[in-house]
Length: 278
Image 1 (cartoon, rainbow, N blue to C red):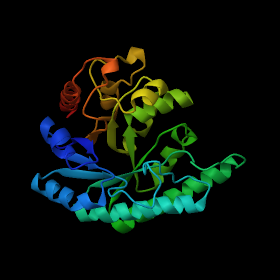
Image 2: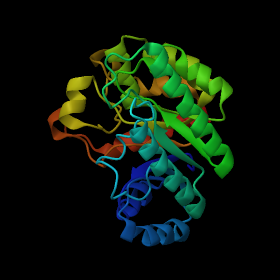
Image 3: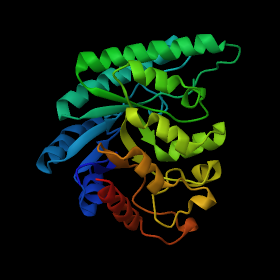
Image 4: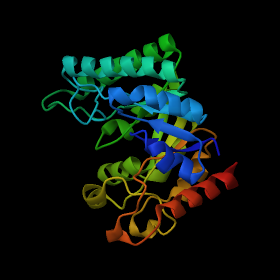
């Protein structure tokens, strides 16, 4: 299945996560610079479909982790630093033939206390302008991924932005389950509203903030009962009805503290769901 793939941040992950699960797609992220040529050879030799979660190459000038990249910062120099990383990522996307790149678009990371909502929203709109311009200039699709306790996820901003800009949305199931709990909105209503603008999906799961703090990205598994707080992955995939990349964004293991499950059963389960929707 070309649409289903795995998130990778090491060359060994191609065999460990993609090929061993009979997949043919990878989402590549934060590789050491010295490994990039080898990564390119492996992608070509294995004929993998590919996308990038910014950045592809770990920048030595950006704070760690580089996914903590915020385009809504009040501090302009912080925003410019993130855009520099995105420009570099777009160049790598062209080099490896990636179909899209993913960037985070959440709450400000710098102190925004005392700032008006209108000023913060103006910054967010300006960042959308710049992202759209970059996407058109570089002829590469940019998918924005929302996360965190952000008003932009449920105040209508995302829909308004996606309606008028050549951008797509990366629906991250794990982060959206957390955001729905933190911001007290209905996850499935949100999915229905944003479905026309989704261009990719990340799959991992949790029951809430405590799971995330303890285990971070938990692999999807059919044992995860939505009545216990887990995101209902089958229901969300039915709402989103994806004919675009779906990426398993978790380690290739299941936390033993949550049950002695094999993460590969989750891969098979997700594949079967997608096959019934195709």
